[in-house]
Image 1 (cartoon, rainbow, N blue to C red):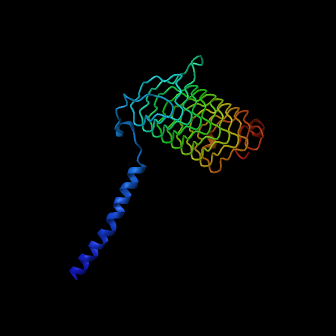
Image 2 (tube, rainbow, N blue to C red):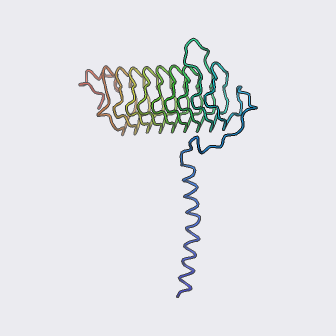
Image 3 (tube, one colour):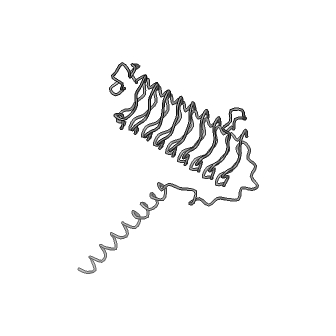
Length: 252
């Protein structure tokens, strides 16, 4: 009796072991990776040029204004406070098609930068400056954009799914056709922004300012927080004006 029970316990433990290992591996993959968890390599011999492999580099505080860095890899790099220019009189920094995923871009200045087709998924972009930057078709899924400013920046057909953009500003920005499902935009200003055909399903829209925004054809099925969103002279999803709908686009 004791032997059979002992064998049963051993068999159960053999079954639980791979399950436990699998769950730990899954947790390791899902866990967010911050700057302190990344071991940066020596990048002193790397020339910053198009297509360069500058991944896992610590470039915090670097100045890259006007450089042509299209296709470069900055994946897992520390770009905290990097200066790509925020002066319209300076040349644009070209990061088109760059791989900047899972990177740290806190307080970075990338106004006017060309980031079309760039991969920025999972990056920490807290308080980044993106005014007038070009982000068409860029991948910003799962990125942290809290406090980010992106006035008049085009995000046409960009992927912002599952991103977190709380307390930011994208006045006059264009999100036409963008994938923004499950994004958290709580408290962000989208005044005069265009979101024609944008996917806002399951989005968190608490306190979002849609004043004079264009929401024609947007899909916000199962979005939350619409009751606290601000609508004023807003073009609703069905093309009507919020002012003619009692100051709301809910139901329109």
